[in-house]
Length: 205
View 1 (tube, rainbow, N blue to C red):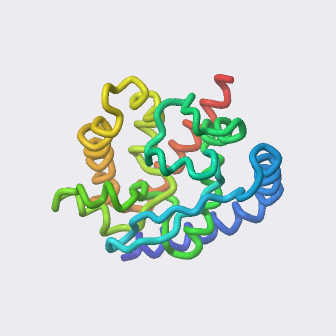
View 2 (cartoon, rainbow, N blue to C red):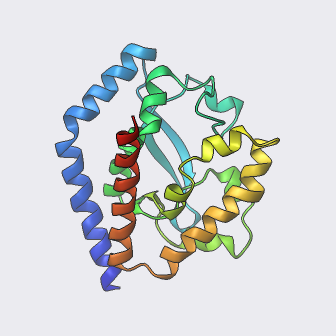
């Protein structure tokens, strides 16, 4: 109970601080998207959160309008649906920043299983549905381990089947570590690993 309350408090403090400090960056990103492909600059998608409840996940739009009608998963870094600005935002996970609003609203945490769309949640086994017992997160161990997910799917013979039968179960298994040990130390460890992964990508440029 103590760890959960401390994590929630940290979620709110970090998210509020991040939105204030990063507000110029958020504005700049919004302008880049607007001048690249116009409005809207935000993309809202229904995802499944804690206790199997739907919520509207907020992120910067990185794909062409209506692109989700042609599939819910992104295949490779060169997916033709991804915009010019979207490619850069996805590489450094900047498109995820508006989810700080979801965190403050209590729909998400900074750390937790990435929320899925209903289509894939309906395929969960009873054991896999344990991930719905906690708040979904902006980052998790699976996001770090499978940061090259799009490239894996790009080389798969059947990308959606690969995602459903291989990647999704593997990510859920990784998520179980934090679900079973939701300590503040593990929470901070995932945040640190995420920062190191993103900065590592920047240094490779």
